[in-house]
Image (tube, rainbow, N blue to C red; front, side, top):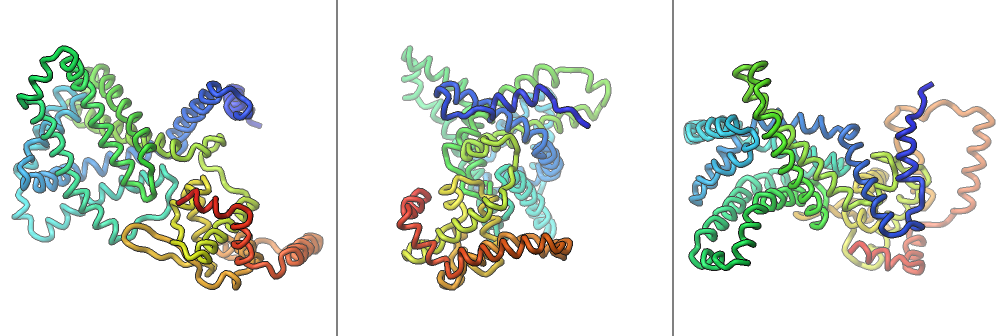
Length: 454
């Protein structure tokens, strides 16, 4: 029998063994910080972040040149295509001389690529490799955010094209604007003032960190297939940006300058270092996404497990709550709920909300309606035609059809117990419909609950 780790047991008791409401505020903050660090370490080892980062390394190597070619073609029409090389060199700066050599090689490939002679099939393959990279990134972020539902194909295609066309223009235009402001005579005259000059020097030091953090915040805000609040995206971006700068400095000092890789891998040393740096970059990006996720869902830090499963009782409670809220909106004639609003109001991850919504949809109680911005849920029939007993039965039977059978046949003694339970449920809930529950929400504070998610 495996003996429990005393250090892990002590750490779990320290972080989750006490009631935070009875602690001083400063001590509770340290406990929450410890829980966050534990959650990030757990996600790194158990949450498949390393596997997703390694998968993105392969996809990046396959798609990097086509991505630069597409971005170069778009930016060339706006006259800012010359900004690609210095920014790419800055991203690969921790590689030292190897980074400059890789930058020259990549830019050379892009310059020699002639999109006009590729033909329709070649252009389609070019776009496919680029879109596959963005799709892989979305899948990795959806995993971090516990989102199982992917965007519809039409929405994915249009949004990916928007990222490929508008994103590079905005990003490089901002970089060009900051560079032009640095050479503006008015700005230079202001910098000659002692306090402003020191401030501008400090801003120049912080500029790379702020630029990469804003880029990460944009990715965290719009890539996952869920609603990410701006403060959470910024929190994750600031942590990821700081980690990027620190890891880059350490990598440049202890790895890129080492001669051991050259002795072992010879001419392949540059490629090996390049792959390691890409892996570290994706890992930092995914860890920042985890920070943003826990910042938006701090309630998930209350458990030491990564994906705590809802008990049957909590699933029944959640199904009744979601069905009642959707019915309440139906009765009040208000706009229907979407998944993100329900998750925010109930303070649960979108994964748990989506599982119950899918269950109610498969059971014929609700329908989904989609527009260009979101997917909402409405009742499939009148609320008085949906019995509370039916909702509870749907939850209890969820997953039985996937097994192909309902499990072993009950023994007579067990069957008597099940019959007694069913009889008690029917006697207690007979005649109670979803309309009764929805109308009860208004009396028992349902209006305030709905308002919290608006």
